[in-house]
Length: 128
Image 1 (cartoon, rainbow, N blue to C red):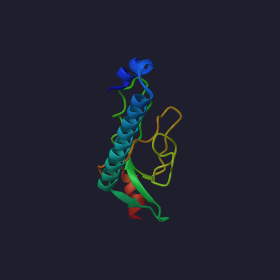
Image 2: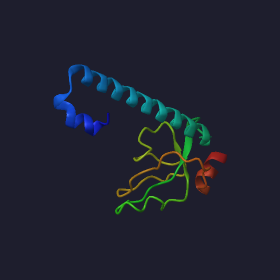
Image 3: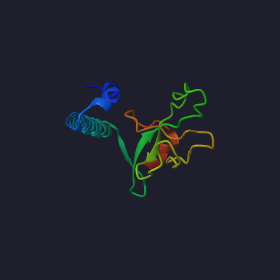
Image 4: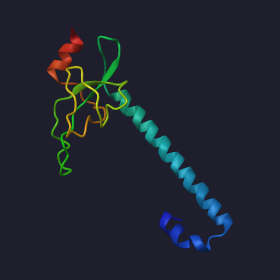
């Protein structure tokens, strides 16, 4: 039984039917979370990891623009090296190895990228 069918039938469901529906819903949610976790681990395994001078690890990300109309997410083509320890790096603050940081109107950093970093200043900081 689908979610909306269960909602419309909710008033006429018995306690056993409601418990079975809830158990099925929770099982499907657990399966979905596990699938997402496995996909995320696979993505992170494919993404290159960089080690900065201070020993912290970093990944490649690009900076989003304003996204004022929803169609501007592909503006950034320069992939920077952004620290993995920065909890706010995805969609938030945090600086790249070259010093680039999202501005006031920027949405922030993208999720990790499978492509290698191509920012010459970030690569120079890592190499030195």
